[in-house]
Image 1 (tube, one colour):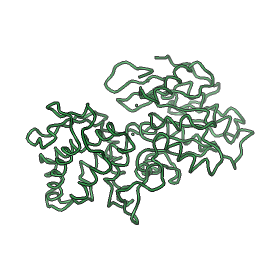
Image 2 (cartoon, rainbow, N blue to C red):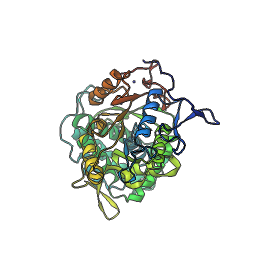
Image 3 (tube, helix red, strand yellow):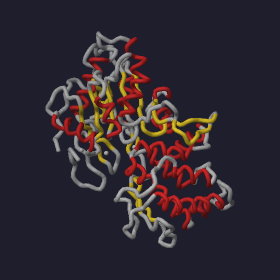
Image 4 (cartoon, helix red, strand yellow):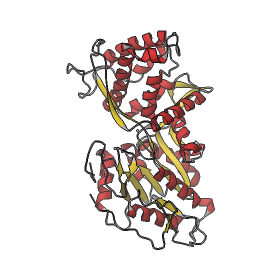
Amino acid sequence: MQKNNTPRRGFLQGMLVTAAGSALALPALAKPAAAPAVMLDAAKWSPRNRQLVAELVARHGQASKSYNAKRRPYAVFDWDNTSIMNDCEEALLMYQINQLAFKLTPAEFSAIIRQNVPAGNFAPDYKNAAGKIVDLDSICADLDSDYAFLHANYKGLAGSRSLEEITATEQFQDFRAKLYFLYEAVNDTHGVNVGYPWVIYFFTNMTVSEVSQLAEASNDANLGMGLTKTKYTSPASLPGKAGVITTAHFHGIRLCTEIATLMDTFRNNGFDVYVSTASLEDVVAVFATNPKYGYHVKRENVLGLRLEQDGEKFKNAYRKNWPLNWGPGKSEVIRKELVAKKGYGPVFVAGDSDGDYDMLRDFPETEVGLIVNRLKKGKIGELSKAAAEAIQNPHPRFVLQGRQESTGNWLPVETTLKYGKTAPTLLG
């Protein structure tokens, strides 16, 4: 799986400037001689947010007199659009489409695109070029036809034609536009309880290793792309039953080194670090644990969506008795996996969207809830408003952190510069 105050001056005396001149070493406030530095980039962090993090580390880190190694404090981070810029699961779906990286027969594909999706029209915004609302049966019939052609002709499936040849066909152009349109339509019409499990069913028949390799390839490709919103329109020559449709995808991913450095700061000061994601757990684990990306999260500390497996192979069934790790489900998983074992909740939580609303506010032990400011409305908008109203409060429960969406970089303010806009904004 989305913002105008002037930044206040820095807060601690005796800051050490690195040789590069871009990062500041903030001495811990208790036992400074024995404490690791709190390294937060002054060019990227809101000064107030940097101060609050430093104070949090001073209160709960291993340099504190009250620190108990048997009761280690911990932080929980959302992944998509919090720990990175953009959404690695959506990026992977588009990469999977562009590479035709499926291990599904036409019959299996046909079943999965309909799985648990209510029949009938999608939401009113999901219209074709003729202004008619698209329905599930029509678009699925078109995708059945497209996938049958692609499966029979692409050499990576049952055919002999190269990927370059096959992606030049009208059937592929129709397939890409309509499958991504369907993903958006399912989520916006029926909600994430339907849409989030649905999109990961496309990994059916792949092993964990195969999905991990695919995710890494997608990550690397998207890290090398520009951050661009691209429209895809299905061919007018192949209207099918659904007609001509248009969809859009925000290409590209960026690492958020500010989050990676914050994770390091917490670990260096005796905190544990966890990731809670509404993407497939194994997909995000590739990003969070692979040293080349710089986050260094332990595999067992990544919590996300889970599929049933047949040995190493994924099945198109959500894991029995495992909560959907979104919204209330994120809090449920934290209670089930962390609070039940530790006896207490996280002291710090970071998120960006409605899916993080519950875990940002549900735990009395949480002292700082950091919201990556995407100018969102909805439930996360309520917390963002509370954060904006508390900007002068020395001990706020929620804080906003701004970024520039055209680059993915954080800004040293609470406001965000939205993609395609010229003026930063505090609230959506």
